[in-house]
Length: 594
Image (cartoon, one colour):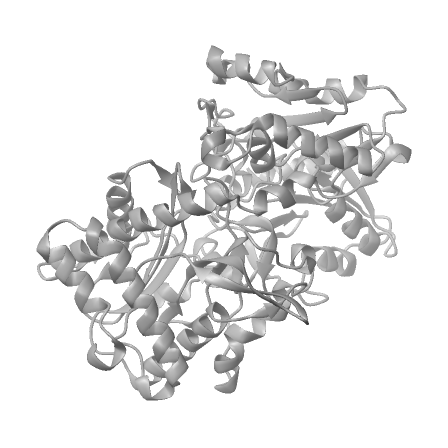
């Protein structure tokens, strides 16, 4: 594989190849057809960029994957490079510092959005380095490369989401008119599915459909494999004015549009190969209106999500009870417990799939933020130490994401102190009241303050948006120290985001406590509108790790109140006295939980 790419470098007189971890839609999770970096390097994380030169082969990734990348690249020709987010640490900076003037760097234009391509050029051009767009011939080197997926497309009822596809299309057209544009190019799969009230299974742990969409002031063109849809859905889309074209026809269609067409396109989303087909002088650069509209959940969606949390809480109760019982007799591999969680969710009404591959990290694996257990890399869970479990499900009525850290035996006072600091941060964020206009990076400090007091921190964001039966990482809203990207947008009622502070001790354990919260209106005063959070997730937080004397009375009241609501909501849906007693024991008021 690597020799083939190096032969290409020599043949085309190139000095470096850049392969981003992406597909042509900039999806976070990739269809098997586009898992190029995993095929090439063995790295299974969800963020990375490969650089190949005549003598170097490197993979850059962020702090979530440092430990994992070191393990997975250990016996390969690829070196792991740390992208810390600081100037000089990224792959582009490396290219600028290590390549000679007049060097040529090739990047696959299908796998890089225009905004990132421009960032590359801004750094490399002053160094005299040229950037070329190519379509890398992966299939020539990748034997038995998986085909593009062909999963069936199905409809989400307008009654469930509270919006018809005609209404959604109308809102996009209103946005076009406001921006004085004739057509919008949508390439984000979740946005397209949201607009048309459709879902599919083209990407594992996702509900998306490989497609492109062009919305004009008069028509809508949907590019996907027509054979994925049954006739009734195709007819319903046609009645809504949606013309269906083959997935591969998007390039020819864009080139056939009138030269004076005024386009609306998002340079952070549209890949460079497609973007370059649009007339540069007639492009208005802006995020799609759909990204903001779908992030605000309708009243129907909010109620459905609340019901979904009950289903998920029941499944997790049964899964953790199973683990406790199994550990009485034997050790349980991490991957087995991950599978069991999915099995218990699958028993619930409307379950569709995992919303991401479950993170089950026992002991040292818990410090690998996004550790994904498999048969060949699993630790055995025992009745001792610490277990971190981060998992989620897609249900027809909503998407879940929850993390719990539990003690399986005695733990140190240092661990309890760190766990309690994480919990205090979680409670502080969940309890926050803030004025309209507040942004995610304004709130991040609330979750970190108690760790910072101890000289501790964590390297990931504190929260991300979550879709409705859609992406578990939904842009643009999030909670993070960074003000870049979507974090610059102020929170509004109806957003669903995660609350997940953590702490990770390399080689020992990980701590993370995650619930999903709904942004809601708190009150209106003479100073304006104030917002707060409703915690949606329903499952006990492990109290055996809590140092109660470190908590304030307000924090104890929040925790007791949360557990009272978990108990009230889940007990009627649990099966048998054993499950109910398990729940009662784990949701007792804190002072009586030990």
